[in-house]
Length: 214
Image (tube, rainbow, N blue to C red; front, side):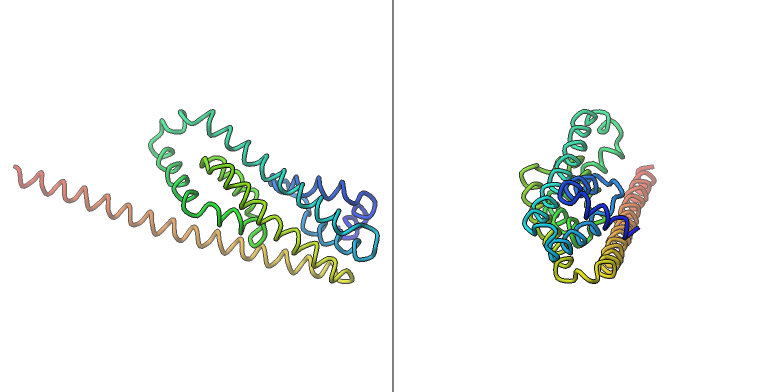
């Protein structure tokens, strides 16, 4: 697989990199990170220009981020009344909006590069939650700059070990993403337990008052 990707990178270069990074930000399973590293290696060898590699990867990623955001945002606007009719969905939507209001920018930034596998889903989550687009763009572009510079830069510096660097970064990013998801599930379970306990306490209190009135 690695050899095939390297062959495609050598044959199609900059246009392929732009398309692949664009698709990866829409949650399409394409090897964007490996291709960026490989393109950095080709830039080191003089087969591609480093500035063109970085620009193509950045433009593709930003376009993909924004398309994912707007797809979800338009869905949110179109079906907002339907979502709000169900109390549980409405409450979930409000919690998502509150989270994005407080931590959305930082979450968008770190899911561009540190936990990149979660990036495309954060694009959709930001749109669904109605996170302001101008804030999304700023944090998204900042994160993509780090992502592109890190992966292309490592490919440029370690051109002879592209496969090893790609595997290492992929494993690390996947581990961090799994850790974040696990942490989120633990927090959700704790909050759900607290809400359930509070609800049970209110019911018990209400039942007690009802008995006292009798």
